Length: 268
Image (tube, rainbow, N blue to C red; front, side):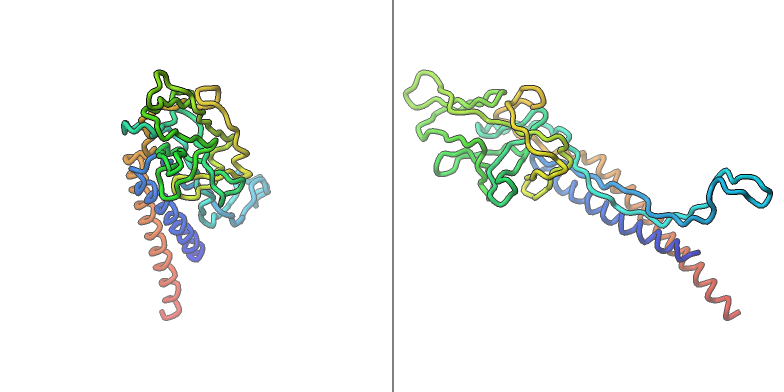
């Protein structure tokens, strides 16, 4: 009946609205450093079984197919796509890009385990000389690193080792190293905003390691990773979503006209 059509089309409009929200957020972050786009995953709903395949029909033959009427669609989740963003040269000594897999770990007292993870490598120094994220939260890099006040030059190699040349020194000295964290299932990380992620049971625990070793990318100083959003792909998805929305709106209109015709039969 037309009632099923109405409910199926309504479920589609709700799912497409969620997909539109996801696409809009991707496009809004097209210039956000380290941002990873998400996609909405769909699945069909229950089916009304009117005829079962394999049953015997009126002529004594088995039905080769069944008769099922679907009840619509829903969004099952949003999946983050951890594709590599383009490197952007900033010429800032505390801007660091990850070339490959891995996350920076920062201290976050409000997160489970006390840590959060990010791909945004825009760092600066706080009043104590510690390396912190260049954001309003100012979260400290972990393991913590402090730059001497009299340091005149800072160098970070591809393996994460940090060297500084202090005033009057002939050779740079190593003050520590930057580690990376990896996850078995990065898509299971919880998005908490500010380009930050939290570990969950789905992502598995963080495994810390040295950059440029197996399973970890290398570090590139004076670069940051740009947004991984592909504007062309997102605009195409936006057009497809809009067209699907229009088609389901037409389905609702057709179902309404059918119900109106049925209701008018009584007046005839």
